[in-house]
Amino acid sequence: MIKYSKSHEWAKIDGDTAEIGITDYAQSQLGDIVFVETSVLGDTVNQGDTLGTIESTKAASEIFSPLSGEVIAVNDQVETSPQLINESAMDKGWLVKIKISNPNDLDNLMDQDQYKKFVESEAH
Image 1 (cartoon, rainbow, N blue to C red):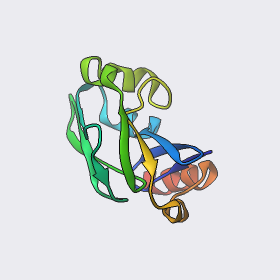
Image 2: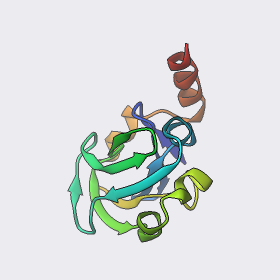
Image 3: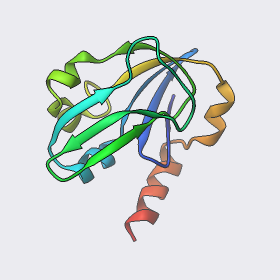
């Protein structure tokens, strides 16, 4: 199951863990990504907390956690090769994995259809 936030992050849910990254739409808006910094292993985040920073040739943006939990894995590859996010935002470009501490956070996120409509409404 994949859920989306209004700040353009995605969360692939697998049991009580979630892989998190920025959406394809977000990376396309940012342009060429040149730097990524994420939370570190063991950090605890709440839904909406800053999870890291992403910089592109156009802008720098904060990454917000779509869910609350503990960071249990960090994708070191995106820190050394940030272009992975441009190439594969929803696959190789994941940022962190967290152990979900509050499953009710999912109620505040959108499914794919809702997210698509949200993006279309923002574009107008």
